[in-house]
Image (cartoon, rainbow, N blue to C red):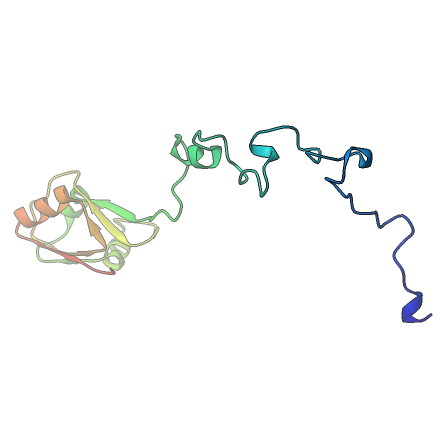
Length: 149
């Protein structure tokens, strides 16, 4: 066998259709594209997903309900009320809360929420605070420090 013996399979190659060569050729004049309109013009018709100016499906769908946020941040959340059992001037971090059993899981950085009352001054170090939680901690004489940004 030599390189000049190699040929495509019989019947696998078809002749190119020559359009616009008169009515006798079968695809004359408008070349099978019809008379007028967007699809008869030269160049590509429309891009994939185009719906005639209507908001296309691939742009409508994420605005509907029940679609999860992509790259959503997850936090280990603790309410201010859970911190009220700690001693005064304690430094509160995610590690210290895990040791004391206030939180049992670590789902990401610590975020303090504002539900409950706080009467003890604490030094809280967390990745995020709600405005309500920060106000309650500072009203009790404590301090809030944002870490991990």
